Image (tube, rainbow, N blue to C red):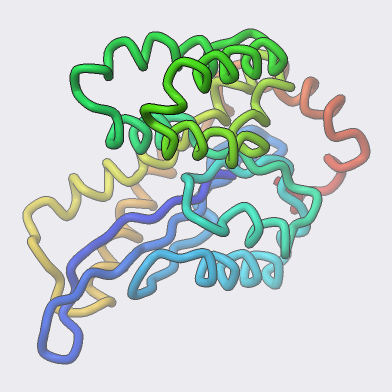
Length: 242
């Protein structure tokens, strides 16, 4: 499952304010993508995500194997409150982007060369060795960046335990960001929306159009499914589990 939010300007009480549309995208046993829900809130936060996950649980979703999310503070904890067995992978791409914001432009090329040795490592052990080297080289100059990687490492490094086919799907939220790109195409001619209903109706139409193309399983799904069955033995029975 992938969870992410996109923001729009909506008229509320005579003025336009930014609101977050929470999107939940899942892949079920059959390997087909499906939008499981769209939710609207004034801002993005872990507390509202908690209410989203509670609603999904109440609607019949009993288990999530892996959740791929951005680095929003408290997000992994919110997921595990409702689905304690779920493995939460923080988006590596988001983490890299956020890291580079705090690295001087003159250092970015060299820093990225060293950072690639961490997130492109073949094993978690090697990645941790490279992270230690990164700390030794850049820690004093960019402690905020290095501390972020160290503090979030438990959730940043989940993907290392899986084979390549699973890794490339879960290490980033790109799959749900592509849905948001389709939303932006639909809404690009509108700078803002007069009310929430007008926005949600347009996005719902976008979902219907997108899901017409999602009639085939994701690439190499049979192999991926067999691998997941080994990693999550006993948790893949039943149609409601994702």
